[in-house]
Length: 388
Image 1: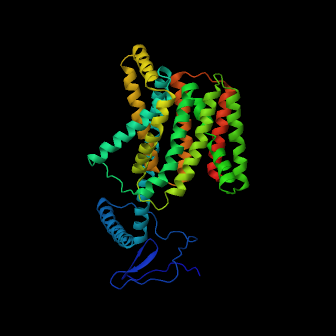
Image 2 (image 1 turned 120 degrees about the vertical axis):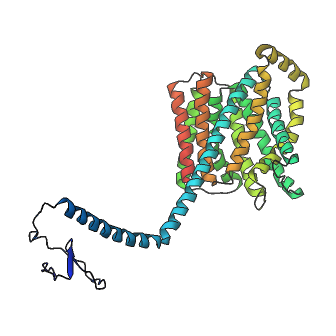
Image 3 (image 1 turned 180 degrees about the vertical axis):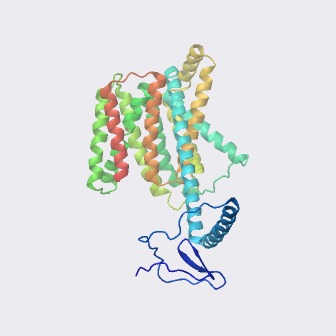
């Protein structure tokens, strides 16, 4: 019901069309006040003097302060809003932390691949190069435990038994990837290694009896097709390099399977877990490296590399060994903070950064059709992790 504004008594004051009683108590109407916009304003516009205008401003300011105080009082009692802000801040900090992990992981991996390729170009002995990488990481962690920079893990015999198959698969995958990069371009190795999801589905289906939905199988088509297209159009194709990358894919799939099955319920941090993995892998790879290549070959190759490159070669070897351990350590530490799916997506993006960086730094020749195959394979990998 709409009612017009009636004249008020001297004891009442009309402010903005709302009737208020100065001396009495405030009364609240259950219905909203509806102004009458049909009738013209009964108070014509007047020009106020400076004194009247000042008094009017002070009165209006006082009224606004009254309204503001009530609003502030109500806002202070709104606890759900404060709780929501705290949750948002916590989520923001977690996102920043994950972003730092990813950026560090990718940067360390790019640096490792650059120095590793430089070492292999001057010193083509992948078995010794792989051994030095594991030895450096093992030494770094032993020193950190002895000096109490990092807390040593509490392990038992069962822990090392379950770690052994993981270490075997890790050793094979690491050496095979290094062999691949000693024969072909870094970009080509990582393009082939982007096909790891196809091996994961194949092994899980044949050996574990796992079944997957149709979208997962469909996502393998661009992965396989892209890798095949990149391999066929590779300018400097090498069968040993190609097979090394494929074996590395298969080995790392088994490493992930053994790790998931054997490490359930083990209270070891990601950093210490990788440290123990490196130490056991070092014990496994050392006798094979000596048998395949041998100290005499290493000595002759080392002398030749130092004579050609100079003292910088020693720095290259040290850098690739240190950065190999650091990037793997950060990747295992990130697993404590993120889900496996997020980790897999980050691993795919890591390969893109390595491929692009290696092409720029080493001036790797690449044809458009080869780049198309790489893009299709990486896109398929990304789709696979989304539908898995």
